[in-house]
Structure formats: C-alpha cells, structure tokens
Image (tube, rainbow over all chains, first blue to last red; front, top):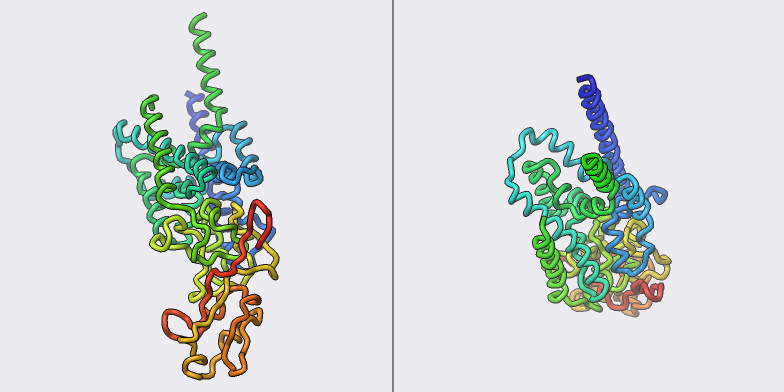
Length: 220
Length: 195
C-alpha cells in the first residue's frame, strides 16, 4: 500500500517537473520568436536553435547538400537521445508542450477511437516519415522539390504564429485531433517524433533485456 | 503494423515523393526576386524549408511568402515584392536562415536585381512633371538625371533593392520604375562564391 502511494507520488512529482521543463521550453521558443521580430536582431542569441536541433531537417539537409556541416547542432541532441531515449518529445518539444497545456484546459473527455482508425493513423505516421526521407533523397539526386518540411512541427508552429493561413489551419487540426487521443499528432503522425523514437533505442533495449531476463527466470 | 502494411506505406510515400518532382521541373531562372545572398535558383526550393524565420526577421517587411498560384515549386519560399516594400540590405534573413538557403555576403557585393524605368508611365518622361522620388530614395545613387532632367538608371550601380519602386508616386498598380531579376547575383554553393 505504502509502496503504491510512494509510486503515485513519484509519478506526480515527475509530471510536475515535466510540466515546468515544458513551460520553460515554450517560454524560450516564444522569447526567441519575439527576439527575431526586433531590429537589430541580437546576434549572440541562437534565434534558429529549434530548427538547427531538428534532427529530421538536419538529416534531410545533409542528404540534399551531401555534406555534414548542417548536421552538427542536431547531432548533439541525437547522441543524447541515443543514450537517454526519446526525451525530446515529452520534455522539450514546444509543440508537444503547447498541445499538453491546451488539452489540459480544452478537452476533459476524449473520444473513443477504434483500433482500425488508430492503426490507420499510425500507418499515416510511417507514410509521412518515409515520405520526408524519400523526398530528401529525390531532391538530392534528381533535383526534385523537397516537400518534407510540410509536416515538420517547428515549421508548422513558427508559420502558424507568424500568421500564415495554411499553417494556422494545420496547427488547429493538430490541436483539434488531440480530442481523439491526447497528443495523437506526437505519438502517431509527427515525423520528427518517429525519427527520435527510432533513434532513441534505450527504452526498447531495456524492454528487450527485461523480457530476456523474464524468459530465463521462467525457464529456470 | 504488419509487413504488408509497412511495405504499402513505404511504396506509397516513395510514390508521393516522386510525383511532385515529375510535375514540377527545376527552374534555372525565375522571375521571383530573392533576398540578398540567396543560393542559386535550382537549389533554393530544396534548401529552403519554409521555416518562416526570414519573413519574421525582415525589418523592412519586404519578404513575403511566394503564393501557390504564382509557383507551386517555390510555394512559401521568401520573395521580395518591391512595390510593397524595398530591401534595406540588413541581411538579417541570412543570419537566421537555419539551412543556408540565404547566406551572408559582403554588403557592397549585393545585387538582387536591376531597376528599369518604364518611360511610358514615368511622370517626368511622359508628362514632363517634376518628380525625382526614385533618385532621392536610391541608397546607392544608381538613379541620376540626364540632360533633360529625366531619371535614368545606371544598371551596373543598381543593387535592385526596390526602394525606388516602393516609393514611386505613380498611382497605378505597377510603378514607373520596376525591379526585375536581370543581373542578379546568387550564392553558388559548389564554387562557394557569390556572383
């Protein structure tokens, strides 16, 4: 009993810390957003840091430019994700943070979706992720236009807050879609999330090891 | 997800990536006026991720996203519409571009395009009225007076900033002085040079 209370307290504490980190990230995003609108721009501030650490954009650009120079800021985050698992989406991503905060206030109840619909949405996620990579490959080798930016979360949020109509609609769709399942965009569709989940193997390895241990114990 | 679904998604996405490329051929030269330090046109639509940072940072508010009806390939990439606002060559856009589609170049090397006077619309040329607004606003003194006090553009001096077009008092939609991409310089990635 006391163990359960302790566990619940620990989960709640973790959630509070997570919310604080998310709020900080959102604040930094909007602070940098504001700073890019003032003239002269502060040259010491990394105004495009969110785009530079965007792993999927960095990989796409590396494929298109056939050089690794644009990868550097993103590689640091990718290494951290490789070591600690995909902490970016749940802790740092400002889009995820905004969705989390908005969902807390907007949606009290969520719709029930059938496994078929859920499966379809997840398939769409894989489709979008492979589309981004394929688009970068074709842009690099056949000079096709790169269209992978359309689903990038930072491109969507930045353009939506600039006031460009299509992006506002897309961002509104992301928020509204959360009524099906909290953060359905992040878990099923976001190509950046897919990429970080593929890279951040720590949790998967942990699960595999625990399964192996369990099997060994059962066989003994 | 089973193997069949995965393979279906994979092939559909590859097909979706191929289709726009078959329909939208790369343009070597376009009529879109790009910000200073922009890379060559064939690569621009690939390097530009439409992040909107340049649109946001532009202090003169001269950068606008290309409309889809104007060019599907270049949709949402930045362009200068001089009639709305001219470029002050602050190069803030190059400082915030995360992918290097717009690069910082020497201020004296900038050439976005060239201004041309439409003598049939110009108040001085056609109506013999006193107007030298383009001459006053030109930051590089590329517009000067000829012997009959009419404005003339020196193409080799003009940087194509578009301040003349923005301030032209001709009230029609098209100004009497217009900037085109002719003579523009672009940043060539392979040679690592702006020419």
